[in-house]
Amino acid sequence: MKIGELAHIAQCSVETIRFYEKEALLATPARTAGNFRSYNAEHVERLRFIRNCRALDMSHEEIHTLLRLTDQPADGCSAINSVFDQHIEHVEVRIKELEHLKQQLADLRRQCQTEQTVDSCGILQGLADMNIEAKPDKKHTHLG
Image (cartoon, rainbow, N blue to C red; front, side):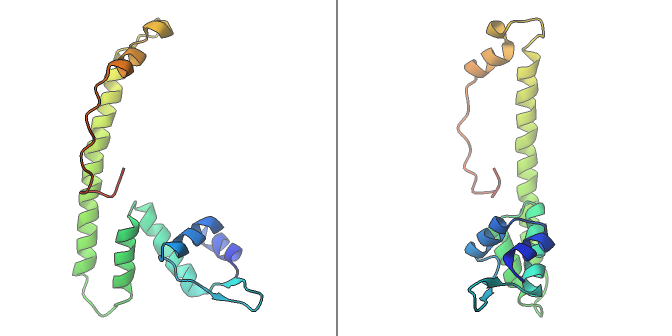
């Protein structure tokens, strides 16, 4: 099948498929005599797997690891569990970051009354006066 057909079946864009090929997440397909990419059922299955991982907000590194493990079906699941345990930790960190962000936004929102004019808006003043802390080193997470 051609790339457009694969994109339709997998419900993604042609650009996404090319990107995953470039990132070595999706195997480079064979070429037809007319030099078109020729995809097969394995590409469909792999692409769906990748897209499902991305839907869970997994990094390309995590997906690479899972794909390597998938290619070794006789091995145990402990390495897969490890990838998921680390990803769960990343999600927990991101939740804390988002909760902090929500609190900052709520604090700013409380500073503005609807009756105020823009030049006395508490939100805008709060944004102008905010002291932004240096972002922590995000080595612990692949997100944000």
